[in-house]
Image (cartoon, rainbow, N blue to C red; front, side, top):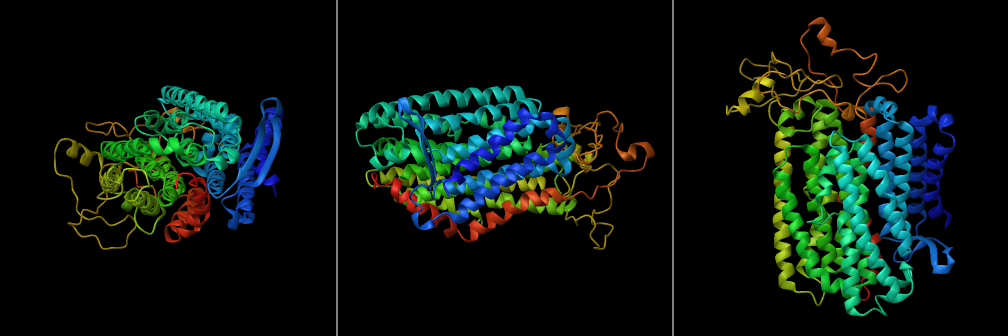
Length: 602
């Protein structure tokens, strides 16, 4: 079954090459081409998971080991173990769901008019780099795949992003390339000291042949490169801009997979290959981790933009992952790996939801959304609530176990690490968990709860008047309306207008975010059939919403979760519940591999 590893790379790579060789023949099939290839890749990943020998989870399986550059002793070495398998399946799943989002429903018109061939090509190359990073068992091959993802993500943000996409994409590429240069120096130092780049052999040697000082230097260099991609405070500043400006599919893959490439590098390379360096740097890694946890939570409390808040939440959640690695214990590292997968599922769902909200309201500014989503869009508001409480770490959902195990690992770190210092880290991490709950609850109070506010209500709130917080019955409810229940239809337009154009709130006090979407925002966010449609605001589109021509009062559109959104989000919701209720399913896979990589440390 070794062919599975090569096939996981060959399917998206050949698909991307065919787009270059036969662009005109494939153009009519673009809306299903990427979906078919990503679905085939997902099927191969599921087949790999089904045929994986779980009794040998600590050893690489499905290995491909071929001579690559014989003169330098470099090999094309691929393989999968208990650490990489969950991330490979996660990558294939999220890529497939992104194509589901692009090829159906609200995104299809934008898909047609937004360089579709280039978009499919970019996503397929991105998938090659992401899966290759988790398959690579050669240091230089790992670095090549690690760098491949930067170019497609740069173009994904720079071409299909929002108004500030150019600055965000340049910031992303500069940070990650500079970090990669430092990491390459560390990898070359390992090669110079050991004479090999084979990850399997280096991990088995556990640093033999390298002096302690060289291990520390190599660990710092490699760690900086990985920390930029993670990202770790204070190397995180590229992330909020990239997430805010990226299209929905870019944000999902960036948070769900690309950040995991950085943390995966600690488990695959830095800790097992450089154990003495890991032991020396672990207290500093833990310090940066807890600062990131607290900083990320406080930054989230200060945000108005929903996507930016979710981006800063990733800084905090990745802080828990790094804290787990810093403990150098099986419990802590298992928690870090579990949190890796859980964050990919939950934050991927959150960014899908943020894209859906922005597509309906034409803004991600939380105060401008007007609140009351559970009344106006009860199903969408319910899924957003579910994702938020999963991310804040509610027991029984996937977000709980990773953070709990990371904190428990800090309670009893590895022998040789200062326990008092790590107990402080544990306390600060616990405070960060409380702040995480705080900012998600604040977000829910702004977006999903309360009475849906009109432009007049938003104006009163900005001027200091007390907002009306009396109970509200969801739209369409058969409950009796009394004269004092504040449930009568508002005489002013609601701040939500469904799939049509945004409300024309141009009077005093109108939220600045409630304006018509820019061409960039509309590229991936409008509804309609794939054939015969036009981009919003383009030729053939109406000059205004349907009620504009008739003068009829606008009614709240009953546009809750759409069918393609239900299809894209259901697997994520199911897996969040599955891993939350049955954490042993994932922990039993990672534990043998973790015990092996910690052989020299413990």
